[in-house]
Image 1: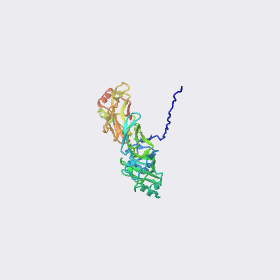
Image 2: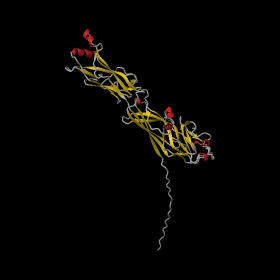
Image 3: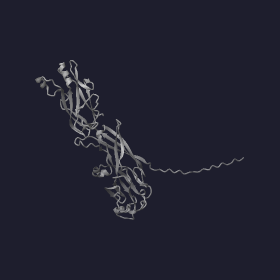
Image 4: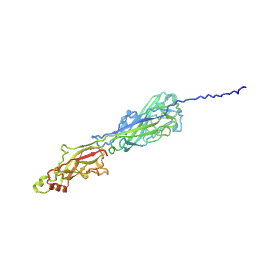
Length: 415
């Protein structure tokens, strides 16, 4: 018996593995620091400490004048298909649309969780344009590179930015390259129309400029605030290069780190830590006339330097309710001492009111927040100590000779 032959039909398929560069996200750190400068007490701003590269490294004066910074990125952009001569759609040619509108970024204190808002905008874009076929060849063999670049783009050199972008002053060229930078005062499509076929074109070392708006450091706690913002890259994205120019990165993430280094320094003159309370007219008036003093008091000057919010409160050797007392060592008889503070101009309370003879208490109530409007550099304030009339009478009636006690006044920046 013959078996039925089994025929195996084998189909061999060819599998093609295309190895394409994977798009990924770039990250860059944006750092800024606030440290008060005694020589510039009204310059209460963060200083951008991010390393500068690209356009602002070449033209620092121009960037300083406009508050602009720049970062060069290792992004390469290549044509995915030729740019046709006299194309009607800007997206089929050379175009840039950068995120030039202000965008908010929430930054959070790494210790306290407090939040603030930073704003950032792109204010320019640049790169090195490369035409590997040579611009002279593209326009029919023109030997003068400057003329050829103008012919390619319809009479305007590549560095002459199309509106709404603006010329920046940067334009270095050869037959195959053109280093450029376009300013972006507003958000919009900046496009050039090629007047000749461009089979190959690239951008190398993409360079973007940015501006920052930072919060008021005088209202922030000392420490680090961090946050991040991601820009998407591609057709119709935050950073849009049209439909035929393809970047090798799909996103750019900016990591923000704002450091606040506050100053809070209080100086008391030598001997100012020993406060002697006396009658307003002095003890001699009582000795000479027999007229009992109505109050015992003393004003103690101090100098304060601060860029920080702070609160004030008391600690007492002899507590008396919510305030401090002085006591007679032998009998233990004690009387309360009222302590208040007057702060210099430029320091206000939470409601923006000046601080004059504000009562200091052990629990800090009423003095929970004082804040500077400008950096306060060694300005004079006053601590007021007073024993009221009824307490003075009790002291005199007791026959005691001396009342003492330690009163600690606390300036606390941990608000």
